[in-house]
Amino acid sequence: MPTHELYAKDPGDPLWQVPASGAARFSWEYDDGRDRLLALYQKGKDKQWDGQKRIDWDLEVDPHDALGTPDEAMTLYGTPYWAKMTDRDKGELRKHYASWQFSQFLHGEQGAMVCAARIVESVPDLDAKFYSATQTMDEARHAEIYARFLQEKIGMLYPINDNLRSLLGDTLRDSRWDMPYLGMQVLIEGLALAAFGMIRDTTDKPLPKQILAYVMQDEARHVAFGRMALRDYYTQLSDAELREREEFVIEGCYLMRDRLRGVEVLENFGIPKAEAEEYSEQSEFLRLFRQLLFSRIVPCVKDIGLWGERLQRAYVDMGVFEMGDSNLDLLMAQDEEVAERLDAERFAAEERERVAEVTEMIEKGEGS
Image (tube, rainbow, N blue to C red; front, top):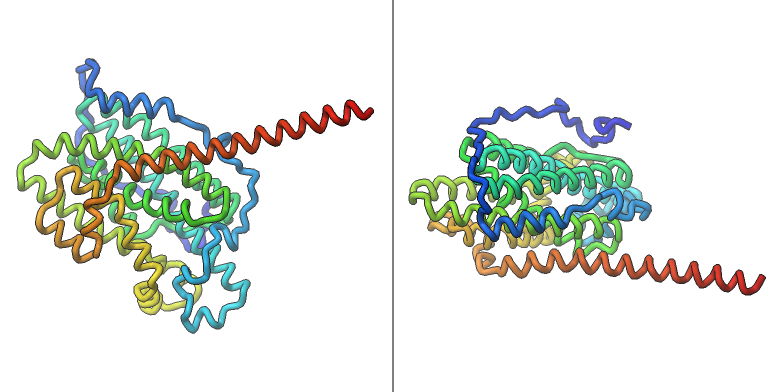
């Protein structure tokens, strides 16, 4: 079935064209480059994997309970609308929310793929081009996986959220070579990592847990790359240039915060937009969710040297200022460990099954 027919709302023109500006930069310096970045490039090569083989696509998914979301986490929980819903209605609502969440993940990954390709084109250093080339492949794999999950397991997609589209467009239109790093590696991917992690750590459904754990293993490298490149570059910028980038971060963070309400889902269930926005703002779970989503962004922004007074005030206003002291390296190390542990558990289970099959065959042979 064509993807267009699976959209819960009309996505409009199937192609979104973003006019791009900026120079394509070649480097004739083929020396060894920066050791830290080349080590990350080697890791990017070593850690490539096939989404068709590493993920167990035979696992079944109930599209009406794809993530095991508890009632209390639903935006409409405790409202008059919820009281009137049948179990079937609630299952349909869960399906739409899972579709909406993973659709934004999908669209963000395609955006990350395009931004990584832009970095290959525009970054002046060859070692950064090398690593960005591996990231472009990673993002293609992620988009492939999320698209398959939505098409085969959920059977529904949602169009890209307006705020995500706006931030992606601003990132790609900017001619400065560091902006795809800042917009994608720090803001969009930082927010996505936190969202992935919250679902990965709370879902009891094995297939989405696998997908999110393996994607996050890649994303940990991507954020490390963005931090490394921007930290080096931003020490060279003037105060005025740093303030421009801080303004971009402030606007992007507000856009990302407001992206997360899922109002489109409630509108699909006949709830007027203003009322849907009010319910979203009143949701205690959503308020906590939105706050925790900045756990990856705030320490990264501080680490790369964007920590002016106005930016700090914006984070105070969002209620996330204290997250600037979070240990980002520890979070990233944990992301890698979760994926490795999941692999180990899966391989151990498969080995036990093989041993059991061989034992059974031997016993049958002895008994014949």
